[in-house]
Length: 182
Image (cartoon, rainbow, N blue to C red; front, side):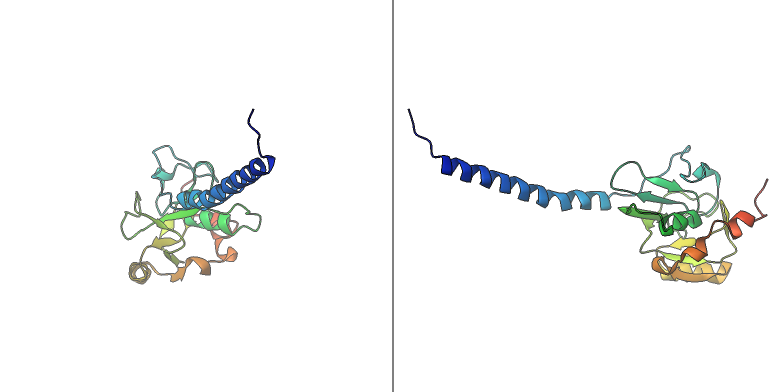
């Protein structure tokens, strides 16, 4: 019968345990990057807004989507709703990715595709253009396109981090907008 060395077995067990732990720690950031790098999804003909159930394709203006680490993305029929959700003090889920449409490359009345990273986009606030909920923001991949839109439709060009909760209060202009059909 062969003698075993309990000290060596303990050492191997500890080495395996540490090695497994390091492997997991190494893979976790890769998993997080995979979620963050997930691309935007084009909404289908029946895709609805997570907040109000409106069918996205039935309304004008830029749409948005939030991807979290788990589950399907949340879609928004209007950028005011997107920012109201992101800037809500009770919002604790960190988005893995947020996308909006580049309105320089898609039709305002029937927007499709042309998704860009919301955090790097340029936004035009206060323009004459209407979205699904009335007044909304325009989103653009380039400052030049945002400025061109602003000169034509009015409004002010802003960056993602310049938009405040007061600018996206859903009890203000959108709720009281009378231009929407009844």
